[in-house]
Each structure stands twice: as C-alpha cells, then as structure tokens.
Image (cartoon, rainbow, N blue to C red; front, side):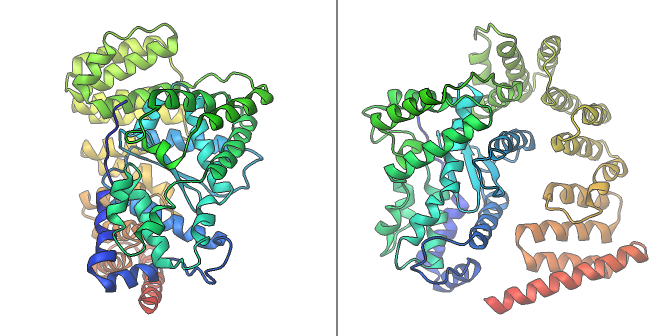
Length: 486
C-alpha cells in the first residue's frame, strides 16, 4: 500500500507565521478563537465547539488547496452522514462533512461535528458499510467529545494552544513529522502527543460507532472488515502505516474486540448504493488521472450490474479527462443501458455536453434531472453554470435567485448570482452577492467593501436599495464588534 503525504499548505504557513515569525499575529489568532474560560474545565462548551467548527470549515473551504470542491461527492457524503446522524444514538449535533483530495487513507473528527475524509479512504472502502463504519467511528469520537476532552485535560491550555493543535491536525494528519515541524515551539511535544487518540478512546468510538451503524441500517460487519484488511496489509510497517492507523491506534486485540461486538449484534447485510459505487469510481479517476484509470478499468472484470455501472461510469470519466469525447459518450450509452437510478448519470451527461460546447443541452439535462432528484443541489449548480457558460446569465438567475430570497449559507449560490449579474451589467446586485461570499468566508472587511460599492452604484429598485442599506448596517456592526475584540 503506497502512502503519500500532502499537508495542508496554507494552514501550515499560517501556523508557522503564528508560532515563529509574528507574535502579533499569534495574539490575533488567539482573539479569533473561543474564550475557554477556566482552563481546568472538563470539556469545551457546545457554543465553543460550534465556533471552532465554523473556523475550521472556513479554513478548509476557502483557504485549503487540497479541499475537494466537488458538490456531487460532498452531497453523497453528506447524505450518508445524515443517515448515520439520524440514529437515536446520536445526540442531535449538527454535523458537517468534507473531502480532501489526498491519496492517503485517513479521516478525522474535529470539535463541533466537523468530519473530514481523504479521497484515498473513499477509494479504499470495498463497500458502503465500510465507508459508513469509518464515518460512524469518527462520529463516535465527536459524540464522546474526545478531542475536547484531550484539549481540556491540559492545565495550561489556551486559545492559542487549541488553535495551534487544530491547525496542526489539519496540516499534518498524513505525517507526524509534518505536524512536528509545524509545532516547532517550546510546547511542541505536549501538543504532538495529543495528535493520536488513546486506546480507550478508540474502543469507546468503536462501541458508539457500531451502535450507530446498526441502528442506521448499515452492516456493522463493515467496521471489522475494513480494519482487518488495513491491519493485515500494514502489519510490521510502523513507519509507513497509513495515517489513519497512526492517529487511531489499531491492535489485534482491538480488531478482535470489534469482531466480537459485531457478532453479538447479529446484523443483516446492507447492499451498497449505486451512488457509493459511482462516487468511488469518480474518486479513483480523479486520483489516478485519465490515462492510468483507463489502464486499470479496461481490463477490469465485472459481474454484477452495479460493478458494470461503476466500470462504464469510470471509463466515461477517464475518457472525458483525456478529452476523448466520442469514447466518453459511447461509455455513457453503455451505462444508460443498465438504467442506474442516480442523479450522477445526468451530471456525467451534462459534463460531456459542456465539453462539446453544447451548453444549453447540458443545462436542460440538469433541469430535467432536478424534477426526478429535487434534493440534489449539485444539479442546480450544474444548470446555472451551464447557462452561464452558454452566455445566458438571465437563465442562470432564474435558477439561483429563488433560493436567495432569504439569507443563505450556500456560498456557491452567491458566486453564481454574482457572475450572472456581472454578465448582465448589474453592478449593484453583483457586488452585493460578492459581499455575501466574503461574509461567509469570514472576511468582514472585504464584505463591507463590496456592499459599499454596491450601495454607491445605486442600481436596483427601492426595495433592493432598502434591503442593501439594512444589510450594510448589519455588516458594519459586525465589523466594528470584530475590531473591538482585536
């Protein structure tokens, strides 16, 4: 098993600046993070965990180069995560899932219900229950507040220390050496020791994760199956073990304990969904590149209809990546013959149409699919982006504007709205939408600038101007409060 390291470069630079170069920046970071109150407290409060989660998600989505900005993949994982967190075992915390484009086999949980997965983990999972088992295990860590408990156990823990640790976890999850380099300070050893969960925490997360899997209808057998395979492949590879095993210690006793617990559950098998098969295939092509993916997929033997669908989908994606559009279209024809029930078929078709320059056809393909899969926002993005690419921004606005009549946390919608209004020469509306994007990024200064530009432009009717003025006052107040806290 070949393991590669890809640290989060921007977060690494930020942490180095904080710890080694700019003492003022260090204080600013401390001011941005939650006030932990009494350092002897036993855990972070829910409000503190939520604020940490918000900061982490902003860093990942807007500043992390390895963040996989693929709405379709994220949509699938969010749906899978929602199935797990709807379990009565879960306390009801708001969970967020994201993917890093990284070949290493890894996943991690952060305070506040933030769970990250590497593409390497998705590609390695043999079944949907295996993937769900890793996610359930990470949810178990969050439900038991393991990270918060590790942080608050340190008597001298400060906001600065917590900020350093969280950034190090994101930046160095693939390599303890990378994390150690980032934590080059007098307290590095103390922080580094917390990057791995204890065996007791791992067993506790296993127990909770298995309960979540069982109550959610997945096969708990996926957990021992996944861990046993990893354990067998990496036995005796202490220095080259997957990152997941370095931060989640795995022993033969623990594997046996998981197997024993699963046996007591007497769980029923769970068939992997078609979306799991296609997402895994998409990730494989993304990681390997078109040419290598073709060399693996063309000779691959398949038996079941799902295996055939996965292979044809992967071939279409690989041909598309190599700009062999006719072959991609033919692979899509073969895939359609199998009639898989998934929105990913329409997305693939639209991507091929866009590659041919047939933007209107792509937009209509996604629009039609939205009637069958109304909850798939990836199809909405697809339609709006296709209209924009085809030079019809007014059609794009018809797609996104109805969803933005009320404030939204969907930055992609605001980006599309801004692009469409820019194309139409509607300066006020374009800058206001861009201001909302910056606001979601946590950049209050840039958000304020954009809203002021929008106000000076003087476009829009009376109602739009009144709404803009009210929003500008809100952001000014947020900006002023943030400046006072610095």
